[in-house]
Amino acid sequence: MRSGVNEPCTQASRFCLCWLIICTLLISVACAVPQSRAAEKHYEQGIRLRKTGDLRGALREFQQAEKLAPKNANVYYELAKTLEDMGVWHDAAQAYQKSLELKPNEAVVHHGYGFVLEELGDMHGALQQHQEAVRLQPNNAVFLVPLGNIQEAVGKMEDARSSYERALQIKPDYSFALVNLGAWYDKQGNTKGAIDFFRQAVKADPSQDYARKRLAELEALRGQSAQPSNEPTGAISEPASVEKP
Image 1 (tube, helix red, strand yellow):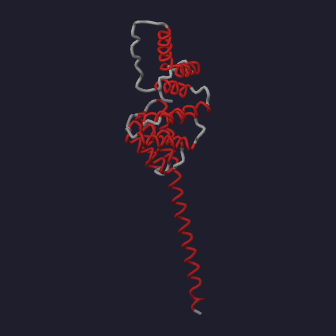
Image 2: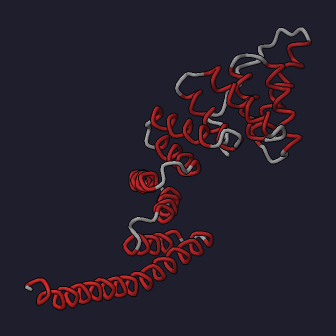
Image 3: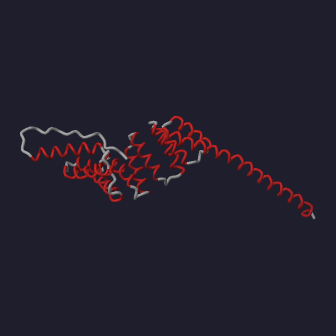
């Protein structure tokens, strides 16, 4: 029968096809492993150089890692941080975007992306990124303070106060939250509240220069107002920004 005549040939063809597939897979794996190892070496070297302050060297290493591993979200994240440190904001934003395309639920990446968008003047975009970071890690006090900063910048003052207070509920001695909350009360003209939080900030972290200086100014101003005087006290200038975590 014709089926009997063709059967051995069919079996042989199937065997050859299977062997061809196996060989192709082995070759692919053999090529991929060295490439992956090479990407990892560039990635690790980039991290080492970035820690030593050699940003240009780190950038070259991360760019090489990107070429060898274009689907690695961590590579894009480190590349973004390096570009951010160099002040190359647009390229940093693109690298953060690529990292988030590959891993959209990384809170720390949203956090960093928010700072870059702020530098680019996209305050509403920055707000969205910081909100997403807090949504993904609601108990991270470090993410709540920058969210409060952006909320203040776009005029959401009560939301900002709530973010600072939430940060202090999580971490009561978090000096950056204390400083920002003190500054928040200061802007509202609430001297007592500002002094209280600035005192706590300085106690938690004596290196908080703005809190220490502003506290001294407010205490001096309150002391002057407690005593009748015909001399004008003068206006007290406020720094353009409060230190970020």
